[in-house]
Each structure stands twice: as C-alpha cells, then as structure tokens.
Image (cartoon, rainbow, N blue to C red; front, side):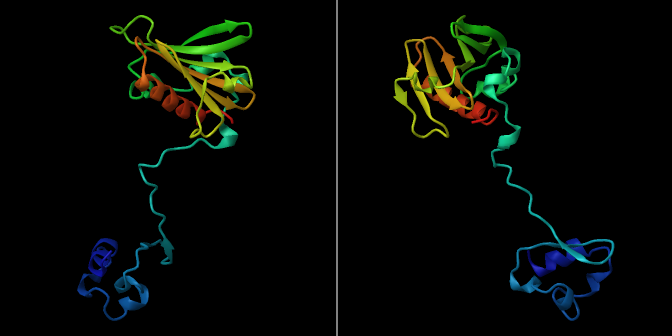
Length: 201
C-alpha cells in the first residue's frame, strides 16, 4: 500500500489531508509506510494500533475438523442422505434429486442413500452412498494410491464404485449410468473425496 493511499483511506476524517504522505510527525506514527511494508494498521477508539488479519482466500477448500466428523458406522440411512447435497453431485456426476434412504444389503446389513437422476435421464442412473463393513475397502480390483485413505475402485458396464477405509466402516460410492466409463469413475472418486471430508477416518 502506498503512503498516499494509506493517509487518504485511513485518516480522511481526522484532518490529516493537510499533511503530505510520510512527512514530519507522521513518520513516527506511520513508520514503515514508505518502506514497502504490507501490514495494514487500524486505530481503535483508544488510539492504540492493532494489526488487521488478512481475510482467508476465497479459493480455499473448507475442511471439517476431525473431531466434528461423523462416524459412518453409526449413521442411519436417513442421516447419510445429508452428507452431501444434490447440488454438490451435479458437477462431478449429473443432476440428481433428493437422497432416498435404502437398505442396500441385508447379509451383511448395509445402509445407504441413493440420489436418483432427475427426470429425463435413464431410470437406473443414480449416485449411491453406502456404509459397508469395516475392512471392505479392498473389494475393488484397483488400488487408489492418491487417496487420503486406503481405497480401491472397480467398474462394470453400467457403474463405477470406490471403496474407502473410514473409522469403523467402509465408505462405498457408486455412480450408475448407462455405458459407464472413465468420466463416471472419476466422478465416483471425486464424490468419495467430498464425503470423506464429513466422516471420521
């Protein structure tokens, strides 16, 4: 910030417009102003200076603190539907409706939430989140080495699945779409990363 801009914006209401930037007594109070310093200093009601903290970058990806994350093994199917919003699935996969709780399997019991594709898509297109038993992260045929947890993936003609190791369970994400290919498998990986930010691992 230049010296002139600092005087004009910070002290415009205190009559300092008569004093040129960085001259005379102002050097005492604005030390560093002409030295290229990048820290802004505000003055509070007591006249003491305080350093302002820069705002966080808007491009930073928020991360849920570990202690605030849910344990997937303890979540009901209904609660699993709130791990992601339908709008968050549009970009990595496709437009979906609200999540619908379901029992994916009874032996072993597997709870899940299915987000069906919006009307106009194939009837079977969907995104499924499920809580498989602990240790099932090895079900996929391909190990995913660039994941934040142990994970594997597998693909078939109409779907791509990613299994991720989390605390007490295995997160399963399935993207089902007619003639599934590389894009659907990449979508399953991206959605898995998204959900992993909400569950303990």
